Image (cartoon, rainbow, N blue to C red; front, side, top):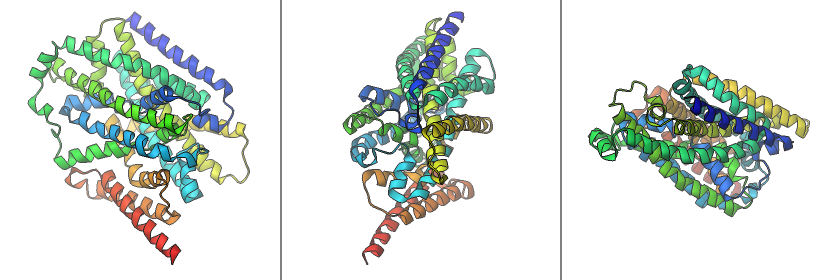
Length: 461
């Protein structure tokens, strides 16, 4: 294992050095949020992909497939569909927001200052929740490979992310995302290959997989599975890290291509990580007690020395690349969309940058608290989704598509969607197995449309 530890240490050292070097030309919150807006197709595609390919979509996917079969792979493709639609229909229409640096800025231009504040609040909460899922995944990696507790492992690994993202901002995030995207792009297919080899080949895996694992609705009702698909499609649609990246391309054509390529690449990645979980089930003969660490266990037992070090680096790349993106967006949401709008005097670039860096540290601690209280990675993700799609997604998508509406429509749909989600999940206890975020999303959509039409009629009368 010494060779593997050296490879992992070198990888982490490179990430830290590159991230800190990127901080040298950081001068304002604009740089901290969207950098210099000169990124091409590959850089944008890599950072988009690296930001969503996190612990929930990798180790969480492998875990669910090891428990219930291939249904989770199919459900995750809902996310791929949503990213494709964003690249195809939304990106070409966002030129009017080229001065924005956050989701809240877009909402302010469309619905007013308080809409920016509310969006900043929900941006911070949802990004912190998704960040917590990635921290939990980091903890599992260190637990399996280093023998330390999940909490201490999370603290050790996350401190590296916190270091370079706090000092280097988005420039550091993008550069490290590219490195991490390349490493995980190599590491995951290699892990799947060695997993099949250790498990007796493809034929043996198919023969020893329970028949129900090939049923995509195994463990779900039909309504429950559709709900999961839609939750994954809508839950991270237009969340702040993706919106920030849509504002970073050198042209809208470049950004659209990057988003569509990212959507296409996500499908084989979901298949590969899910199959690792399926092969792991066969390898351990269904006897593994904690499926959350099944991918890590396959690295530990199936891969040879040397290759194992590269695979550990790849797994760290998965979660670190997503963690740094959501950490950055949570900080920007807090500072740019909540703190600055309430400041009566204009803050200097130096002060806003300092506040953003302090916010990074504060949110980092908050995310650790979430990890301690909600240990399951996918549960954290689904809880975080309930804070976004039923509240912010519809008016945000409408603004980006150029649909004219009103401030009243924003407030009505936000309250209606959020209230219905809470009642459906926590009072009615998820009837029919349909998650409240889906019901809340459609209520939000209906109320937004009605309020938009009504206010236009009042204005024209």
